[in-house]
Structure formats: structure tokens, C-alpha cells
Image 1 (cartoon, rainbow, N blue to C red):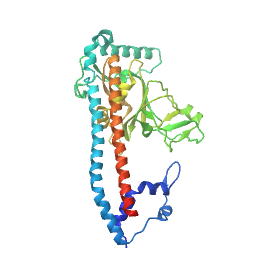
Image 2: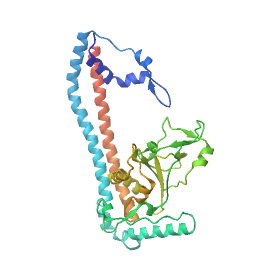
Image 3: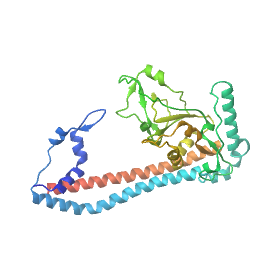
Image 4: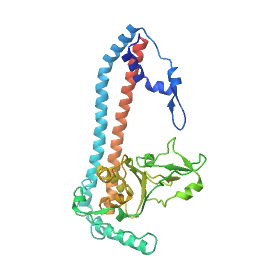
Length: 344
């Protein structure tokens, strides 16, 4: 006879070890039923199973409370990140900066002057046929503005501060395992970087030439299909883009990391969810991306915001690392308790 709850504890507690010893595959790992069926588990008489289970349940009680608390702490850190981002985008983080450096946010250095300069530059690029002529976008309505900003800032649309916006190919490229370029999508955009995974496909030089985009040092990728809001900054990676991500090239006098932080904020996520098409998979159109309202500070204040947020996010990273380390130690403690009970 067996006690199912006892063996449930065995699988739950030793699952990492069991998976490690039974999995197979390269691009996609899996556990075969035959291998799993042949995996040897320890057997004890029913009295020993019940005794061990009861000992384990008693030993587990304090760690369950700790596990719940650690999960709660991770949620609080996530909320803290968003709180910092909200304060940054409302200008609250840099109130002291504006008081200390009025000369950097007024006159020709003001946000309004910057926006007019960017619009004039785009007009020149269109005249010189370096950019295509665009349909004029509607002015931002009061109901589109989600929060108040400092008087020295202005609201603009994403399209006002970019030279290019597009998405990836809507089909499937010809894959080549010997190719030098990777075919990426929104799920490859992780915490500001392009992450090449084991199952990320490659393409040839010829396929890259066929689908390549005009990417620059000021290019940002954002996932707009399925998962919304993943972000990466282009860093000369050898990639072509799939349809679940868009890219846009910011104009030279815009701090890309400031825009990146805005995309990471709950304001962008709410906007993306609100405008996403109602299908089985949420999708944000390129038009909606162009229409995205943005709070635009003067360039010097954009840089000050990024500097402050970088420090605050590093603090959040350290907190998360500490909490996850405690979670791992708690999990190891549970495994040790079970092993000692079995060995006893």
C-alpha cells in the first residue's frame, strides 16, 4: 500500500532532482513517459510513509509562513518599482533639480523649445526626402492626459520624437541553423536587452538582407502582440524582427532610457491594454504606438530622471536578489527536512 500524500511530497520536494535526471532534448526539453515511468523512487512500508509525512507536515509549517511572506515581499518590490516610475514621470523625483537649475529648463532649453526643434528637424528631413511625408496626427485631448506634469514640461505623441516606427515580418523567414542572424520576437525582449534563447531560430545573410530594418543607436524594441511592454535597446545585435515586436528610432535629442522607463511604467501598460485590439491575443497597432501620449521634460531633466531611476532600480534589484536567495534557502531547507526524515 502507498500513501498518495506522502509521494506527492516526494515529487514536490525533489522535483528539481527528478527533472534533472529524466529530462532530454536540446532546443526543447521534455520528459518522456518511458523514462519517467522507469525512474526509481524509494519505497517504505505504509507505517513509515505515514510517520514521515506527519513529521514533514509539522516541520513544514514555519517554512510555509516564510514562503508566503517572501512572495509578499517580492510583490511589494514590484509595487515599489512602479511607484518610483510614477513619481519620475510626474516630475516629482526631479523637483529639486528644477529648483537648482532653472537655466536648464527655461527658454531655449525648455521642453516646448525642444519639441518645436524636433518638429522642425522632421520637417527638414521630409523636405530632403530622407523621411516619408506623414499624415498629421490629431492634437492631444484633455481626456488622453493621465496625470499632471510640471509647467516646464509638455505633452507630445511618440510620433513627434521619432524618425522611424515599424514592426517585424508577418510571415516566417527561411531558417538556417548555420546562419549568423537571429529571428527574434517580443519574448526575446527582456529587461532592456535582447535575449537569445536555446530555441531562437537563425537565418542566413541573404535572409537578413531581405528583412533587415534601419536600426540605430537610438532604437528601442517593444513587444506589442501577446505580451505587452517587453522592451530592449538595440546594441548592434545581429537580428531580424518578427511581428510581435515593434521598433522605433528616437531623434538624437531624446534620452532613450527616459522613454524606456516610460514604456516600463504602468501608464504605458494601461494605454496598451486600452487600445489593444479585441482578439484572442492582444495586439497594439503601429498607429496606436504613434499616438502614444508622452510627458516630455527638457533634455537635461530627462537625463536627471534616468540617473535617479537607475539608482532606485538598482536598489530594487538588490532587494529582489536578497528575497529570491531567501526563497531558495527556504526551499533547500524543506528538501533537507524531507531527506532527513527519509534517512531516519
